[in-house]
Image (cartoon, rainbow, N blue to C red):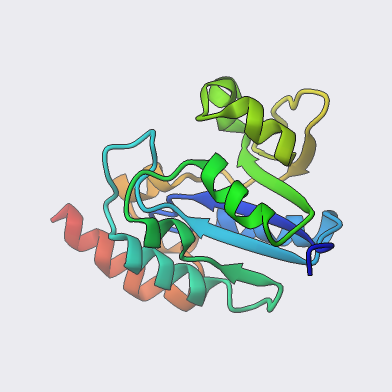
Length: 181
């Protein structure tokens, strides 16, 4: 199986929203890969915590991505039970796959070289950048044009059902509305 090509799309997914789903769909359409592995973080190294617990975010992702059997939601980072670094996750999956595309949002580009073991990570992956509003993407990165004007941060501050994937919409809206009370 070591000859397979995969894309890894990691993040907090707090909550998973239509923008995340569109990135996944676009990646499945445009990248030469066999599978897309979605990896929710236990705790992002750039955040103090998450509004929804890791296991709940994992379950929501599984239900929201059930529309395509090429999508696998991995609990790798959640099982590690601590800060999640892309380097460690990619290193783990590199044992099983030759080619790894690593999907990031364009908002990560300014701080990318500060990521844990960036130089090593850079040697292990083909970078894929999901853009919003036609953002510039440097040479050497694969561009995924996804223009969905929403972020999880915005959703947590004002939950709007239209941005939540239908299979989990009711539960997610109730959960975040309870937090805001």
